[in-house]
Length: 184
Image (tube, rainbow, N blue to C red; front, side, top):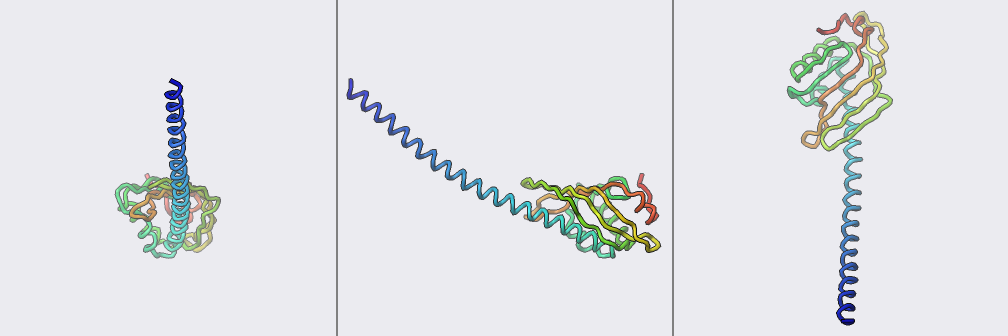
């Protein structure tokens, strides 16, 4: 009877030791996986912020009439939306792209930068909230100071962040300076 208890006790101790060694391996694997995941999240965030920077480069190029960078950055589907400083919501690439073409034709000039940046990166969707600051030019060539709150939403497509939504405050001074009115 005593031998049986000793054997059972030794078996229990052995099982606990084997089990804890297995847990240690799982913990090591989880830690390694977590480190890779954190590195991947950081990489994705850096890529999202780079895409956001590209949007402002494309926007500034559009101000002088160059649409190519803007067209390359946007996901060109029926699901994209734009709510710019002139008002209303444009839905679908056909409408958004047409508005960009119209704005590029205005050749407003100037430059907009993105400041006070906050971002979030998910696995396939990311967004950037910021303040857009800078100036454009009026129809008669006078500078118009702009300062908007903005939200930019991107979707990861084939390993690249593509813009799917842009939203800014309305700008009565910019509407007046360009003779554009709020859309219905």
